[in-house]
Image 1 (tube, rainbow, N blue to C red):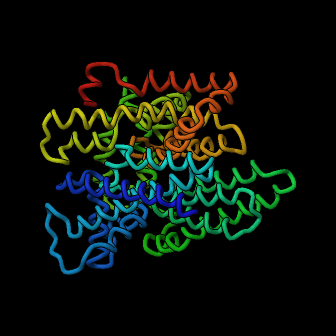
Image 2 (image 1 turned 180 degrees about the vertical axis):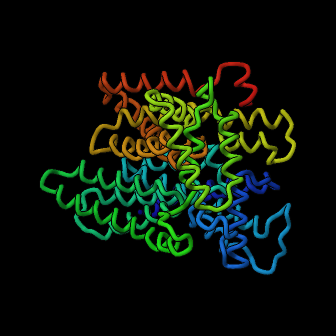
Image 3 (image 1 turned 135 degrees about the vertical axis):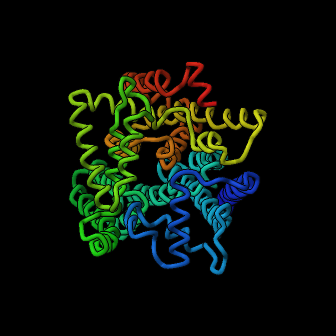
Length: 448
């Protein structure tokens, strides 16, 4: 990269890191919510005692995120219930991951399109409110986003190369991602399929070899952990035992309102799950329950899950609003919560519109196919299992890149659209405004 081109990027990273650090310091103290407490507990036990948690949760969640958190926990500190040891360092690590997401957004935008698109995408990612907010949360999405974007960057930059080293490097990125979220293996497979689909006919065999190597290395990264699980649990568990729990919760369709996220059926299952002794017994209970719920909802199951879970993924909610609802920042005045809510909700509307328009307008060299494959694979997973707004965080950078492309070349983007693309885009926007945007007073009261 030339010296003149490096200066804007350096300024961009200073802005991204500085903004995230400043917001984190302003927001302290931050109450841990839900899975955050689990990750901190496991990380603390790893740092102190060299074991993950208890004998009853030895492979409940993937290991990469709590392991990395454990590396920044200092030794010799006493555990305080109100402030876990090393909490500030863990939050700074998350700020680092969030800044890395901005860098990778720039690099991937440049690889997909050009330098200007990369800079605009990086600038949008640097100040995007929900990415800024997520940079001081202790969920695993930041690490997952870094691994996925790294893998996709290698895949895009090596699209026309014949060498195999980049295939192994991409497989390593997706393999580490799988130790954060198992779904990274499917994303890696979709990236390999993209290589084959976009290769010239004489090069397809070579592209297939590259894709096979990518998948083999990704799976190879998971194998040692799978062997460990077999030795510890006595059964084959690929990465974690929580998958069936997510599938069971995600396939509970309440009656009569099957669009509801929470209800008595889900509460009843969760209570039974938590009261069942034994990690494998809980996994078996969740598997039976999930399959029973799927069978009971036929033949409308696919339709209901598609509508409900896609709505849950793209509804105008966020982890920031979730934290605010549970007073994670302490008591906030309405003068604070109202602008924070607007900052969370309004940019999401424009990003969805701009990102989907950018994908629809990107027709050449596989630039439309790539987001359709990788985001489509994520949608399939979350439609089959569970969905929440938190799960879209790793894919926001892709939407930002394609929205940035529309900003950089608006006329060319619109001229490249065929009527079929406009029709498909109109259907997506109708779905978004009909189901993902709240209109009733009750919905607004719950959201704001």
